Length: 200
Image 1 (cartoon, helix red, strand yellow):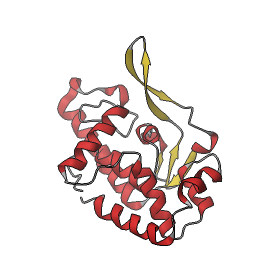
Image 2 (cartoon, rainbow, N blue to C red; image 1 turned 180 degrees about the vertical axis):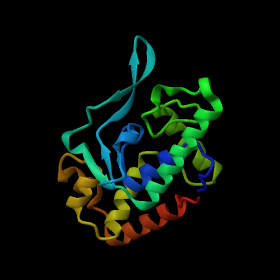
Image 3 (cartoon, helix red, strand yellow; image 1 turned 120 degrees about the horizontal axis):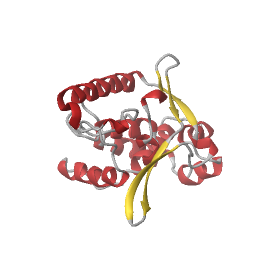
């Protein structure tokens, strides 16, 4: 799936590579990218909520559970993509000047105007993206499952997958993924890799 010019490029990349929840990927701030320690710290989330009949976007430092507060290795490929994204955002600030929304400068996942992506927009646009490329319909959340399935198919320990995904108990991880036998794991991995192959 070619994502070169798609507004959700960095959102999809971070989600498929790290298996993060939608609220977690939208909550990643530039300050959470620790290039010195080569880590991404997941400490913040963005949710869509209702207030006085209006939809509002809220950034929160309260995660789903204590185990959701985690740090994951900063992959070389992702580090380079994040650098490109930062350059893109700086360029848009220069071009748009006063029209660029600087309210969300601390966030990684913003659109060309500097607006924070709304969770529902991510879900809906991802469905459009799949249709545009003639791919089978899957939920955005399935990218998280795909990440876990790929880890399982390559022999990763279930306890390590629990920590990676930020599940509160190993039973959640086991109940969700451990029933996959070796053949179904390989089949799922193949389907996901082919369907979601990201090209520059």
